[in-house]
Length: 287
Image (cartoon, rainbow, N blue to C red; front, side, top):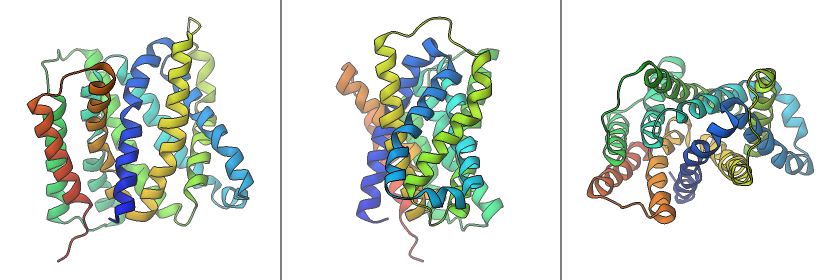
C-alpha cells in the first residue's frame, strides 16, 4: 500500500471508531431502523449536491443496479443489524464481532473470485483478530437468547461487508468513489423506507440525540464511505476490509480522550498486535 492509502485507512478507522458510540447513544431512542434510515438519508443528501455539481449523474445511470445492491448489502442491512446489536451487546464486544469481516472476506474472495490468499496475509488477519480480542478484553457474558440473537446479527453484518466489498470491486470498477458513496446511501434509504411505519419511535428524541445522529450521518457515513470506496478501488476489497481491525483501536482511543477511560497493558498489547497484523495483511507479497 502507498503512504496515502495507509493514511486513508487510518483516517477511516478513526472516523468509524466513533460510529459504535453514536449508535449506542442513539439506537435506544430512535430504534435501529429509524436511526439507520435517518443516517443513510442525511449522508446521501449531503453528498448529492456535490455529485450533481461534478456532472457525475451519467455514472449513476450506467451503474444503477450495482449501486442499489451495494447500498442494500453494504449499508442498509449491516447498519440495521449493528444498531440492533448495540441495544444488547457492549460496544467492545460488538467491535470484536465486526472485526470478523476480513476473515469472512478471505472465504468470500477465495470461493467467489478465486483471489489469491497467501500464508502471509492469513497470518496478518489472525494476528489482527487476536489483537482485537486482547484490546477489548472478553468478559463473562450470559448466553441468553437475546445475547445470541444480537451476536448473530453482528456476525451477519460482518458477512454482509465481506460480500459487498468484492462485489463493489468487481461491478463498480472505475466508478468515482463519490458516486458509490452517495448512491449507496440513498439506495439504502429507499430499501429501508417500507419498514419505517412499523418501527416508529415512541418518544421524540432530544437535542443531544439529534446531534449524535448528525455526526453519525455526516462524519461516520458520508465522509467515511468516500474514503472506504477509494480504498476498495485503490488497494482491493480484502485489504480495505482490514480497517475493521483498527476501528476498535480508535474507539478505545476516543474513550480515553473524551471519557478519561484508562489505557491498560492489555490495550497496549492489543494495539501492537492489531497494527502488526494489519501491516502484514496489507503489504503486497514479494515472493
